[in-house]
Image (cartoon, rainbow, N blue to C red; front, top):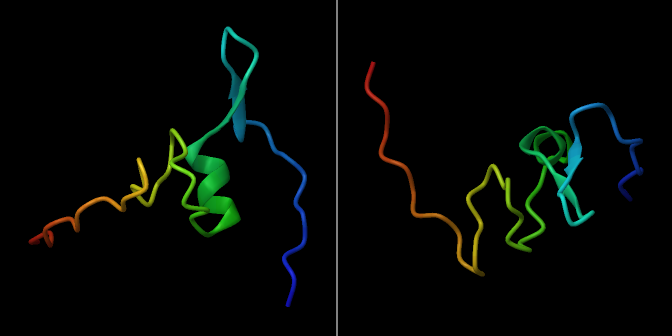
Length: 60
């Protein structure tokens, strides 16, 4: 099944002083997958072509 484009919502991005659009963690989580592009706010920890190391399990 093809993904359906979703309209941007408030808080999905911000503009840098240079005029670049930067997607926020909110946007990435709503999209639901990692594009493996090293996005600045990637909630999956993908950066510089490598996934983040696994997080230790939480106790409690």
